[in-house]
Length: 254
Image (cartoon, rainbow, N blue to C red; front, side):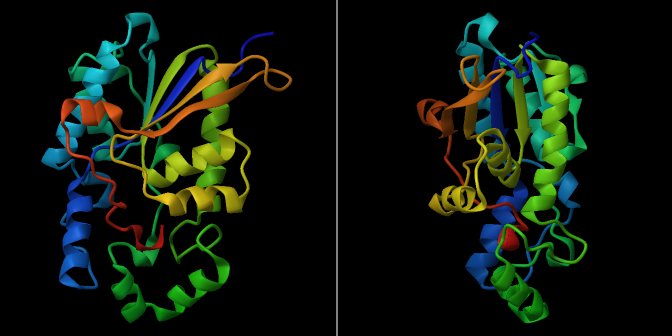
Protein backbone atom coordinates (compact mmCIF):
# COMPACT_ATOMS: atom_id res chain seq x y z
CA UNK A 1 0.00 0.00 0.00
CA UNK A 2 1.34 3.42 -0.95
CA UNK A 3 2.09 5.63 2.05
CA UNK A 4 -0.62 8.26 2.34
CA UNK A 5 1.02 10.72 4.72
CA UNK A 6 4.33 12.59 4.57
CA UNK A 7 7.22 10.93 6.36
CA UNK A 8 7.76 14.14 8.30
CA UNK A 9 5.64 17.28 8.56
CA UNK A 10 6.77 20.59 10.03
CA UNK A 11 4.21 23.39 10.54
CA UNK A 12 5.82 26.76 11.24
CA UNK A 13 4.23 30.06 12.10
CA UNK A 14 5.79 33.00 10.25
CA UNK A 15 8.29 35.27 11.98
CA UNK A 16 7.14 38.36 13.83
CA UNK A 17 5.48 40.79 11.42
CA UNK A 18 5.10 44.54 11.30
CA UNK A 19 1.43 43.87 12.02
CA UNK A 20 2.30 42.13 15.29
CA UNK A 21 4.29 45.21 16.30
CA UNK A 22 1.47 47.57 15.29
CA UNK A 23 -1.05 45.52 17.26
CA UNK A 24 1.07 45.78 20.41
CA UNK A 25 1.37 49.54 19.93
CA UNK A 26 -2.40 49.93 19.54
CA UNK A 27 -3.13 47.99 22.72
CA UNK A 28 -0.44 49.88 24.63
CA UNK A 29 -1.98 53.18 23.52
CA UNK A 30 -5.53 52.04 24.33
CA UNK A 31 -6.87 52.86 20.86
CA UNK A 32 -9.52 51.07 18.83
CA UNK A 33 -7.73 50.73 15.50
CA UNK A 34 -4.42 49.13 14.54
CA UNK A 35 -2.29 51.38 12.34
CA UNK A 36 -1.14 49.32 9.33
CA UNK A 37 -0.76 50.80 5.86
CA UNK A 38 -0.66 47.54 3.87
CA UNK A 39 -3.29 44.96 3.09
CA UNK A 40 -2.99 42.03 5.48
CA UNK A 41 -1.59 39.88 2.66
CA UNK A 42 1.22 42.44 2.14
CA UNK A 43 2.31 42.98 5.76
CA UNK A 44 6.08 42.29 5.93
CA UNK A 45 8.24 40.74 8.60
CA UNK A 46 9.68 42.98 11.28
CA UNK A 47 13.45 42.99 11.78
CA UNK A 48 12.92 40.65 14.73
CA UNK A 49 10.89 38.40 12.45
CA UNK A 50 13.79 38.23 10.02
CA UNK A 51 16.17 37.34 12.86
CA UNK A 52 13.81 34.59 14.01
CA UNK A 53 13.63 33.19 10.48
CA UNK A 54 17.42 33.26 10.20
CA UNK A 55 17.71 31.33 13.48
CA UNK A 56 15.24 28.72 12.25
CA UNK A 57 17.21 28.46 8.99
CA UNK A 58 20.33 27.52 10.97
CA UNK A 59 18.37 24.83 12.81
CA UNK A 60 17.08 23.25 9.62
CA UNK A 61 20.54 23.56 8.03
CA UNK A 62 22.05 21.61 10.94
CA UNK A 63 19.86 18.61 10.14
CA UNK A 64 21.41 15.90 7.96
CA UNK A 65 20.63 16.60 4.28
CA UNK A 66 18.38 13.54 4.10
CA UNK A 67 16.25 14.84 6.98
CA UNK A 68 15.53 18.37 5.77
CA UNK A 69 12.25 19.31 4.08
CA UNK A 70 12.04 18.41 0.40
CA UNK A 71 8.62 20.05 -0.14
CA UNK A 72 7.64 23.58 0.95
CA UNK A 73 4.06 24.82 1.11
CA UNK A 74 3.42 28.38 2.17
CA UNK A 75 0.59 30.80 2.70
CA UNK A 76 0.45 33.47 -0.02
CA UNK A 77 0.84 36.18 2.63
CA UNK A 78 4.15 38.04 2.38
CA UNK A 79 5.21 37.38 5.97
CA UNK A 80 4.90 33.61 5.48
CA UNK A 81 6.57 33.55 2.05
CA UNK A 82 9.43 35.70 3.33
CA UNK A 83 9.93 33.41 6.33
CA UNK A 84 10.30 30.43 3.97
CA UNK A 85 12.66 32.39 1.70
CA UNK A 86 14.92 33.30 4.63
CA UNK A 87 15.00 29.68 5.80
CA UNK A 88 16.11 28.72 2.28
CA UNK A 89 18.72 31.48 2.10
CA UNK A 90 20.20 30.27 5.39
CA UNK A 91 20.82 26.80 4.00
CA UNK A 92 17.86 25.14 5.72
CA UNK A 93 15.96 24.14 2.59
CA UNK A 94 17.23 22.37 -0.54
CA UNK A 95 14.01 23.48 -2.24
CA UNK A 96 14.38 26.63 -4.36
CA UNK A 97 11.84 29.44 -3.71
CA UNK A 98 10.63 29.02 -7.29
CA UNK A 99 9.53 25.51 -6.29
CA UNK A 100 7.61 26.59 -3.19
CA UNK A 101 3.93 25.67 -3.41
CA UNK A 102 1.97 28.83 -2.57
CA UNK A 103 -1.43 27.63 -1.40
CA UNK A 104 -4.20 30.14 -0.63
CA UNK A 105 -5.87 27.56 1.63
CA UNK A 106 -3.02 28.18 4.10
CA UNK A 107 -3.79 31.91 4.35
CA UNK A 108 -4.58 33.75 7.56
CA UNK A 109 -8.08 33.56 9.02
CA UNK A 110 -10.16 36.37 7.54
CA UNK A 111 -11.66 38.85 10.02
CA UNK A 112 -14.11 40.69 7.78
CA UNK A 113 -15.55 43.91 9.21
CA UNK A 114 -13.54 43.44 12.42
CA UNK A 115 -10.21 43.57 10.59
CA UNK A 116 -7.67 45.86 12.32
CA UNK A 117 -9.86 46.56 15.32
CA UNK A 118 -8.65 45.99 18.85
CA UNK A 119 -11.02 44.51 21.43
CA UNK A 120 -11.83 48.09 22.42
CA UNK A 121 -12.53 49.01 18.80
CA UNK A 122 -14.89 46.07 18.36
CA UNK A 123 -16.77 47.01 21.53
CA UNK A 124 -17.09 50.60 20.32
CA UNK A 125 -17.93 50.04 16.64
CA UNK A 126 -19.58 46.61 16.58
CA UNK A 127 -20.87 45.75 20.07
CA UNK A 128 -23.40 43.32 18.58
CA UNK A 129 -20.55 41.27 17.09
CA UNK A 130 -18.82 41.09 20.45
CA UNK A 131 -22.07 39.72 21.89
CA UNK A 132 -22.47 37.19 19.05
CA UNK A 133 -18.95 35.94 19.70
CA UNK A 134 -19.66 35.61 23.41
CA UNK A 135 -22.77 33.54 22.68
CA UNK A 136 -21.35 31.36 19.88
CA UNK A 137 -17.77 31.02 21.10
CA UNK A 138 -14.66 31.65 19.00
CA UNK A 139 -14.79 28.25 17.25
CA UNK A 140 -18.12 28.96 15.50
CA UNK A 141 -18.28 32.75 15.44
CA UNK A 142 -18.02 34.20 11.92
CA UNK A 143 -17.80 38.01 11.64
CA UNK A 144 -19.55 39.52 8.62
CA UNK A 145 -17.34 39.02 5.52
CA UNK A 146 -14.95 36.97 7.66
CA UNK A 147 -14.35 33.37 8.73
CA UNK A 148 -14.91 31.18 11.76
CA UNK A 149 -12.38 28.59 12.88
CA UNK A 150 -14.69 26.03 11.24
CA UNK A 151 -14.35 27.84 7.92
CA UNK A 152 -10.56 27.65 8.21
CA UNK A 153 -10.79 23.96 9.10
CA UNK A 154 -12.94 23.29 6.04
CA UNK A 155 -10.32 24.66 3.66
CA UNK A 156 -7.53 22.91 5.58
CA UNK A 157 -9.26 19.53 5.17
CA UNK A 158 -8.86 20.07 1.44
CA UNK A 159 -5.23 21.16 1.82
CA UNK A 160 -4.39 18.03 3.84
CA UNK A 161 -6.02 15.87 1.17
CA UNK A 162 -3.74 17.50 -1.40
CA UNK A 163 -0.68 16.90 0.78
CA UNK A 164 -1.66 13.24 1.18
CA UNK A 165 -2.31 12.84 -2.56
CA UNK A 166 0.89 14.48 -3.82
CA UNK A 167 3.44 14.26 -1.00
CA UNK A 168 3.06 10.87 0.65
CA UNK A 169 6.42 9.67 2.00
CA UNK A 170 8.06 13.09 1.60
CA UNK A 171 9.31 15.61 4.15
CA UNK A 172 6.97 18.60 4.07
CA UNK A 173 7.36 22.09 5.56
CA UNK A 174 4.25 24.27 5.89
CA UNK A 175 4.76 27.97 6.69
CA UNK A 176 1.55 29.68 7.72
CA UNK A 177 -0.28 31.47 10.56
CA UNK A 178 -1.28 30.94 14.18
CA UNK A 179 -4.89 29.83 13.63
CA UNK A 180 -3.78 27.55 10.79
CA UNK A 181 -1.23 25.86 13.08
CA UNK A 182 -3.94 25.21 15.66
CA UNK A 183 -6.55 24.06 13.14
CA UNK A 184 -4.08 21.64 11.56
CA UNK A 185 -3.47 20.15 15.00
CA UNK A 186 -7.24 19.80 15.39
CA UNK A 187 -7.42 17.85 12.12
CA UNK A 188 -4.27 15.75 12.37
CA UNK A 189 -4.97 14.65 15.94
CA UNK A 190 -8.76 14.28 15.67
CA UNK A 191 -9.45 16.79 18.43
CA UNK A 192 -12.71 18.21 19.71
CA UNK A 193 -13.58 21.90 19.93
CA UNK A 194 -12.90 21.82 23.66
CA UNK A 195 -9.49 20.20 23.26
CA UNK A 196 -8.11 22.62 20.69
CA UNK A 197 -9.47 25.69 22.50
CA UNK A 198 -7.83 24.46 25.70
CA UNK A 199 -4.49 24.38 23.86
CA UNK A 200 -5.19 27.84 22.48
CA UNK A 201 -5.85 29.17 25.98
CA UNK A 202 -2.45 27.96 27.15
CA UNK A 203 -0.76 30.64 25.05
CA UNK A 204 -0.14 31.94 21.57
CA UNK A 205 1.87 30.04 18.98
CA UNK A 206 5.35 31.58 18.93
CA UNK A 207 6.61 33.34 15.84
CA UNK A 208 8.77 30.77 14.03
CA UNK A 209 7.61 28.16 16.55
CA UNK A 210 7.85 24.63 15.13
CA UNK A 211 5.12 21.99 15.31
CA UNK A 212 6.44 18.67 14.04
CA UNK A 213 4.81 15.36 13.12
CA UNK A 214 6.34 12.02 12.12
CA UNK A 215 4.57 9.25 10.24
CA UNK A 216 3.73 6.23 12.39
CA UNK A 217 2.84 3.22 10.18
CA UNK A 218 1.57 1.26 13.19
CA UNK A 219 -1.20 3.74 14.00
CA UNK A 220 -4.57 3.17 12.39
CA UNK A 221 -5.43 1.26 9.22
CA UNK A 222 -2.88 3.01 7.00
CA UNK A 223 -0.72 4.85 9.52
CA UNK A 224 -1.09 8.33 11.03
CA UNK A 225 0.93 11.39 11.82
CA UNK A 226 2.24 11.46 15.39
CA UNK A 227 3.03 14.73 17.18
CA UNK A 228 6.71 15.00 18.09
CA UNK A 229 6.79 18.59 19.34
CA UNK A 230 4.57 21.65 19.52
CA UNK A 231 5.51 25.33 19.65
CA UNK A 232 9.18 24.37 19.70
CA UNK A 233 11.34 27.49 20.06
CA UNK A 234 14.71 26.00 21.04
CA UNK A 235 16.24 26.96 17.64
CA UNK A 236 15.54 30.63 18.41
CA UNK A 237 16.80 30.37 21.99
CA UNK A 238 20.06 28.71 20.94
CA UNK A 239 20.66 31.36 18.30
CA UNK A 240 19.78 34.20 20.67
CA UNK A 241 16.92 35.38 18.47
CA UNK A 242 14.09 37.27 20.21
CA UNK A 243 11.09 35.20 21.24
CA UNK A 244 7.71 36.69 20.36
CA UNK A 245 4.22 35.19 20.47
CA UNK A 246 1.92 38.07 19.72
CA UNK A 247 -1.43 37.35 18.08
CA UNK A 248 -1.61 38.62 14.53
CA UNK A 249 -2.52 42.26 14.04
CA UNK A 250 -6.22 41.65 13.50
CA UNK A 251 -6.52 38.85 16.02
CA UNK A 252 -8.81 40.42 18.60
CA UNK A 253 -11.42 37.95 17.34
CA UNK A 254 -9.20 35.08 16.30
